[in-house]
Length: 169
Image (cartoon, rainbow, N blue to C red):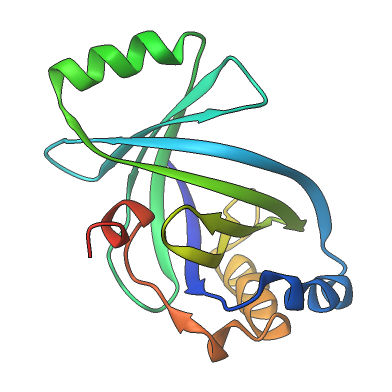
């Protein structure tokens, strides 16, 4: 399974991050609308991600502890050609835990994905995912910390859980 280092915070105004993203020299990739359907399952988290921009979807399984600090996540992705069919099948077989709708602005800094998320019913968040791709764990951690520091994310309210669990609180 793939591995990354993650950190999530609630953020009062994502617009105020734009000058800091420019200072970091992060690159804006896209802004997309995502619908994540989380399914009941015995371990980890299992979700189907659909977007307005594509007829395809992604099945995503991941395991990540609920911690306020940066934490490791292991995950697997599978591209899905017919997400509606799979969603109906999993809804019948496993049951739907919850559905999370969000607008995500994706920025990149080297191997770190910076997500500026507006989550329906929950508010605004920043999520970092530093993907382990050919660099050492120490190098990935250093990059992750650099992004956190430059964006001053340690001053924001940390979130330990996924959006699916936050919705239930």
